[in-house]
Amino acid sequence: MAVLIPDRKNCGEEIEDIVKNNSLNKGVVSKVKEQTNIVKMPKRLKVINSNGNHIPKSSLPPVLINKTIQLATFTNPEFFKAKSKRLSTYKIPRIIDCTENYTDYIILPRGCLDRLKALMLENGTELLVKGRFRPVFGILFTSCFKIFLFETDFYGIVYIEE
Image 1 (cartoon, rainbow, N blue to C red):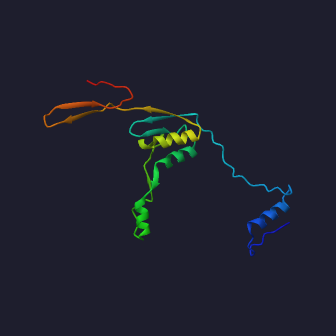
Image 2: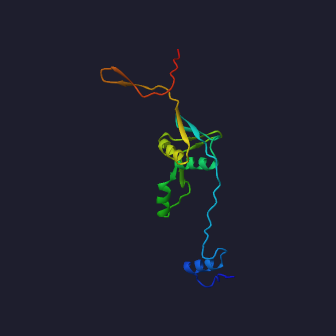
Image 3: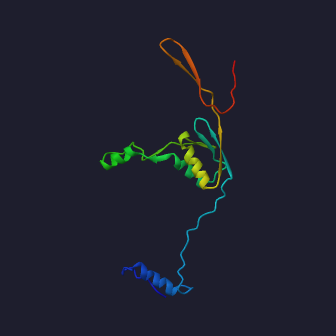
């Protein structure tokens, strides 16, 4: 049996030789693979797009919930500027989190929809985006007090209230 002595610095080739000579299958070095937990990913994910992308937590495993939250978090440059200048970083957050985390939903900003689609495609999940918007009409006043109405793109149902 070979023993690696901590006082002597062993190079990588010496360690491989010791493992080859003492392994059960002579000459074959077995590499240990990292075990990953197999998580059942959902086939479809329904996202409601209104004031943000509302993602239901009930259909997502915890690994995917963490990855979706990481889509809208980034490091704060002000923190690192202050740190590099050796100033106080007392009330400066290190990481800026733009998600809203509720008990049933995670709300991501609307700009993260493309990255969310890429993440779900990477994990083999189909993303179904459902819009829930109110119609928006803009009114522009000119110097002649003429009113111009213009419509925006709208996906959803219009309810007329009297």
